[in-house]
Amino acid sequence: MEVLKFKYPLLLHGLWGVFLLVLFFVYVFRHKEALLRRFGQIELVRKMMPGYSRVRAIWKSGLFILAYVFFVIAAANPQLGTHLEEVKRKGVDIIVALDLSLSMQAEDIAPNRLQKAKHEVSKLIDLLDGDRIGLIGFAGLAHTHSPLTLDYGAAKLFLRMMDTNLIPQKGTAIGHAIDEAIQAFEKTERKYKVLILITDGEDHGTKPIEMAEKAAEEGIKIHTIGLGSPKGVPIPIYDKYGNQTGFKKDRQGNVVTTKLDQNTLQKIAFVTDGKYYLSSSGETELGKILEQINAMEQKELSAKKFTQYEDRYQIFIILGLLALIIEWFLPIRTRKYKDEMVYS
Image (tube, one colour):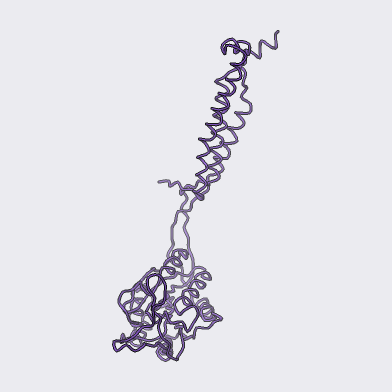
């Protein structure tokens, strides 16, 4: 089934100009008739204008308006989705597990840990060519927000939606994130699988090292990126309007601090033959990980069929020009009058 859409739909508002053109031509015709009435009775005046065709004048105006309609539609660039293209690429499967716990709001990295991580992941997606990418968000629970896909635009859309309010259960469940990634990868393979774990490393009792060992058995290589400072920093709290209302406190009213647990992240990477990186202002860690990914053995990923919309504005430009040509050559006087002029 063909699907019609417009690349620039806002330009279709130009069709309101049709009403202005109609009003303009109605005014012109009435003005001409008023001028003719000044010379006497309209029927007598028209007899003094042999060959003039009011119908042809209306047709010429209609053709001009029709040409305008065609040109407006052409400007909006109509597209039809009729062409199916099969895409085959070689690469590896990459899942990014991003910490969405409240500790990621800490501002020891500007503007804060989470925004810094999302910016780096976005740049990583821009550099991918053939690799499938998936996204997992985790706090007290882990959830797959974007399954493995070759649609990088969709992956970036899901990435922008990831926030500390997305997962209701609080905490930092690194072990659950690794287990979620294991389930998201294809079970039949023991290679071509990379998990990039981005967190401050403060796990809350989910046995991340044991889960990393399980991931290694599945052929998953885990690279970890640590965010934040090893020194404790407070966690700012914001209201729904984005205004800071204070800092997170425990039940005794003491300000809670969060610090980077490098030891846990180093062990996770070591168990799976991956590497640990400390997030830096130069944002070189994901580039180094990508270099290692590109050096891995690659597989032919599952083909993806998608509808590619094809431009059809050319048709409407041709129709508009054709309407103008007909309008230009359509005489306003009848052929009978012309013949009388020739033989007289």
